[in-house]
Image 1: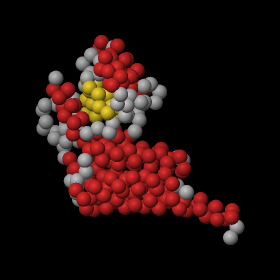
Image 2: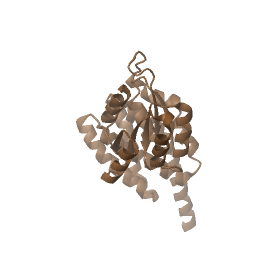
Image 3: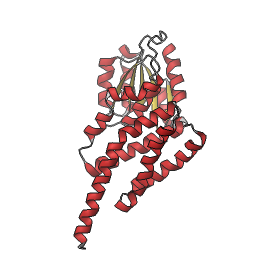
Image 4: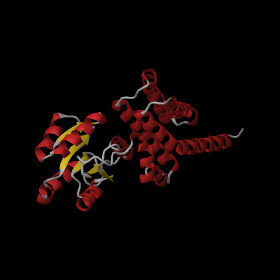
Length: 262
C-alpha cells in the first residue's frame, strides 16, 4: 500500500481516537468525583478503563497519552487494592486528566468550548451531588470564596470538596479576571495560585493588600513551588496561609473553615 495512504489512515485513526477520548471525559470526571466520596466498583472501572485505553495510544504515535495511561494505572492499582483514594492521589489523577485535555486540545483544536461545557455550573453541581448540601449551616452565613487557578479541573475539584458547606463560590482563571471578580464578587477568602496567566498571583496578592477596603479578605496561596523563600515572600506580603501542590483537600477545607471563623 502507498506510504501516503498509510499515513492518511493513521491520521484518520488518530483523529477518531482523540474524538472518542474527548467524549469520555465528562463521565470520567464524574466517576472520579463520585468514587472519591463514596467508592463504588462501577465508578472505579470507568476511570480505570479510560486510562487503560490511553495506554494503546502508542500505536497512533501519541506516546505521551500512553505514558499518562501507564502513570494513572500505577496509581489506580493501589486505589483498587485499598478501595479508597487519598486526596494526594486524587489531585495527581486530576492533573493527568488535565494534561490529556491539553494534548487533545493541541491535536484536535477548537476543544475549548467542549471543556467549558464539561465544567458548566450545572454539571459541577451534578458531580457534587453525592456530598449533599448543608443549606442550614449558619456558621458560614454564605461566606464567599474565590478560587483562582488556571487549571480548571483543580478549581472544580476544590469546589466539589466544599460542596457540603454553605459557601458561595466563584472561579477566576487568570490574574486579570481575579482582580475583576474581587471587585465585583467581594469574596471573604481567596484561594490564589501563584503561577497565573496575565497577572501573577503575587501581583494579585500585592494589589489586594494595597487596597484598604479589602483588608477583611483572607488569602491562601496555592503553588507547586515549595521553596522556603516563596512561602516567606507570600507571608510577608500578607497571605494568611500557603499550601504546596499537590495538597490535602481535607487540610485545605479545615484551613478555610478556620480562617472564615475569625
